Image 1 (cartoon, rainbow, N blue to C red):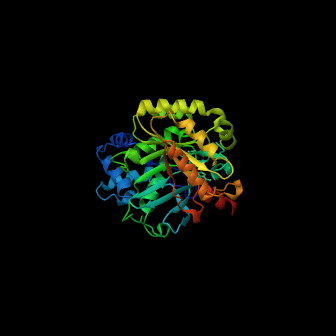
Image 2 (image 1 turned 180 degrees about the vertical axis):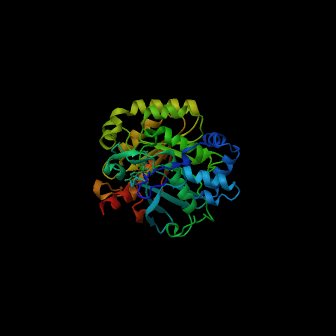
Image 3 (image 1 turned 60 degrees about the vertical axis):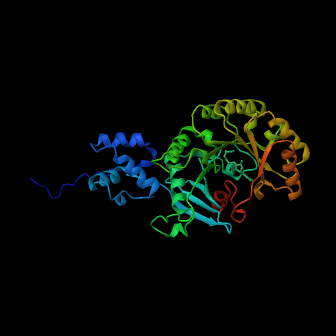
Length: 373
Ligand code: SAH
């Protein structure tokens, strides 16, 4: 008997889609087996996402229709949306992404003669409070998931060198230059989000993922000793950069509060051990800040600190001016003298060419401006 007046309970089932990029190849294979599908489809799905840049399961034309449908019911592919884009006259493009929870993160693509480098964020905000860096100004919100980190890479890969990505529904295929290098030098501290960053790196590096060679992937850290020790055991050929910025504890602690927890003597000891275990070079990033760490005696202290490290390189970076932080670079003559002193002392030293000067390309600057609007 039917009762026309009966109110039918209306169940709203809210399905939270899982980000498929949070699954390793093995985890996806297990999922397919669980569904009764052959596991080799997992490699095909990886290929569609990471190599061909598909944002929809529907496009995966060589998968059975039923599998495509099942995937679409359970998983999402791209979780972020473009919130802002600034393009520099030198080709550098800075992307501001809105995550599903509306938090904002930045990523930058930096084309050069034979490479395109993607600078990726690992956290929303940063808890380390380095006072030359705009990332920390709004405090720390949360870690990015491995899927969100891969979202940044995926978006950059699909849009790094092609026109106005934001305006096109289909990813614009990078033509002349492909995303070739990844540096974790965007917002956040990668070694403070260790598991998710490493999980993402394994997919960035995997032949079935982005297939970017380990030596083209750089983790940059403010000097989290336990993270560096852990990294030394990973058997990964990735590059390690350490943000040093001063060579004596008193000065370093003034700009990098993390130095109080992990002071220079312990940090350099840890670097010796890292080099002994991995036989890999460490790059020390040194931002030159006018009136603070750029005179001859700072250069002498830096040489003293690093002289016994077997595989070390210094990358000098003239500070990007950040008005909120009253940071400015030294005059070019002082920068050159600093570099020449290091060079004369036998240190392997490079001077970073500044990119994206006209678009607030330093860490955290675009997000800062956006949130101030
Ligand atoms: N937490 C990690 C990753 C952030 S990247 C780390 O500390 O290494 C940090 C790097 O961003 C610095 O080493 C520097 O290369 C760059 N950076 C941040 N603020 C800058 C500024 N004001 N001028 C120039 N480079 C800056």
